[in-house]
Length: 64
Image: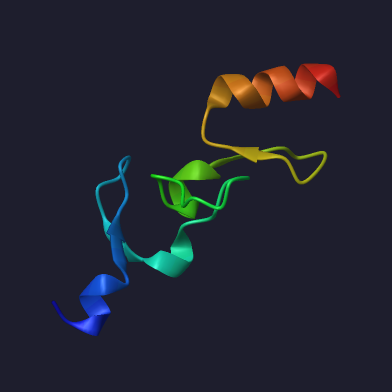
């Protein structure tokens, strides 16, 4: 396996191969299973909140 292939990871949502730098770490320091593009597709217009679940964004907006 080449050095470039070791830096690739498959997104569990969109199934694309992306460089490791496009996967954020969670609180424990583990990489998320989905790429940042998929994880942050729903964004709040009022603040910096981002999520991959539309229902989470709706709940967030109601709370704000």
